[in-house]
Image (cartoon, rainbow, N blue to C red; front, side, top):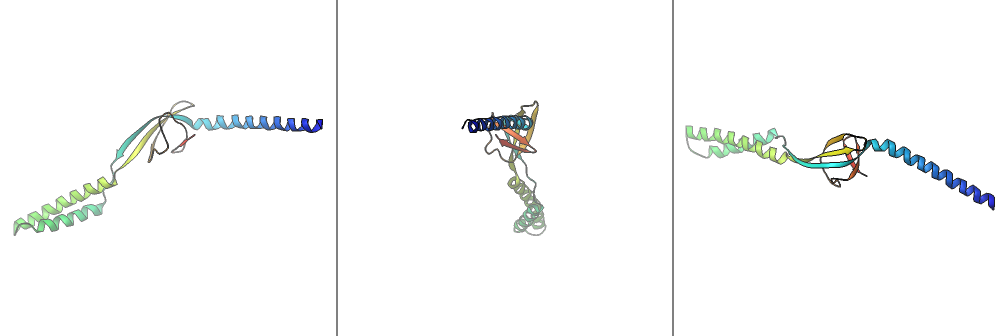
Length: 140
């Protein structure tokens, strides 16, 4: 019975040493990617206009302008409507394509800062411990 108890104690001791060695190994290699979120700033990014939106706006504006006046005045109204419609179509398209991004600054444990631009800040807050891998920020 004494032999079994000693064997069990040795097994537990070896397992504990092995786990603590692994723990140290993971923390030192992983912590080069660890840090704390210092700031999160929302920023609006302008979208690019679709060329088709300008064309559609020009057609609609030209048709509307054609309903005004007669003779050369009708031609001028058609041209003005087409130009105005193209500009309006472009602006509407740009506004619809705009979106918010988040500039995140992480104070790294090993020194320095990492600045990343993320599409979402979901699950992230200032002061949170995170791991930065490639262009991702993952809560720890």
